[in-house]
Length: 365
Ligand SMILES: [Zn+2]
Ligand SMILES: [Zn+2]
Image 1 (tube, helix red, strand yellow):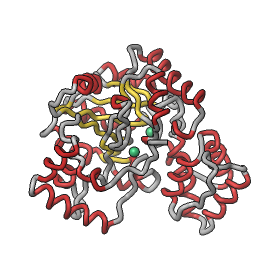
Image 2 (cartoon, rainbow, N blue to C red):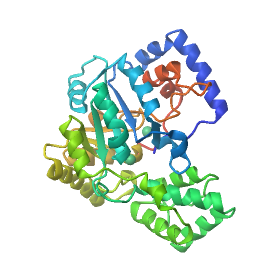
Image 3 (spheres, rainbow, N blue to C red):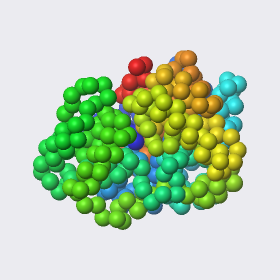
């Protein structure tokens, strides 16, 4: 999961700021000052769907990109950067190469990436990388964040007392935040889902999901659209040049978990991909972009060479293991007109918004 939907006022401000900045070419200047201009650009996506409007009712919005928008964003990038595989990009980063190259990555290994995005990427000759949650591959279960969101969203839409019900449920399960802080549930289903995922470790989230499943009904076709790829699909993508990287065994948010669990997730996922698909796994992406220095050290210890985040914070001690990504989705590059905006896209690619907006993670813990 990534950014939340921007309120429209902020969207308008963003659009006019982007226009002004882009007209004056200040985006390049800011990019040069922040050092982002010469940084290889790594794009991050989650699901790719035929129709955003039809999918967004039952899915986390910032996980969705329509194939039309994906093409618009990639066409824009392709005119300014040379698309390379993640392997080549990694080698260039190690050498400190300044050629403007870009790579496209997809998190979580959703099946629609294989069915909807892969044919288009192949036609355009754009190499891709997929970060998979190994225990999910080939199963009929969507990722934990989707299962939780679907349940919470349905509870919020059907019951005026959904927040009280959830709070009661968490109390009944005797769950406590990892850092011991008390907490209040936010107002919306999406914010509540994000809050829960970022507060509790995996085992606690599974218990919340189990309890919610006894309270809320979810039609089968809702979750069927969020299924993961199979190993055969991944093998086909790999044979066509796609880099398959790791996203842990069970999508754990590393800063919330214990060191032995983290080590097992990191090395277990890597070994499983290598066993299933052959080759060496060198790339990792932090689930939900959550990491601290201990996470980066654990990723190094598990034998990964490169790791990718979802923001622009870079740990000076682990630069190759905290490589920034630009996370994109359907509405990331929309202008005030509601259409794809080259000016916004330019600001995103040059890191202009990162100068004014810091990430919300806690990376220094
Ligand atoms: Zn993920
Ligand atoms: Zn961050």
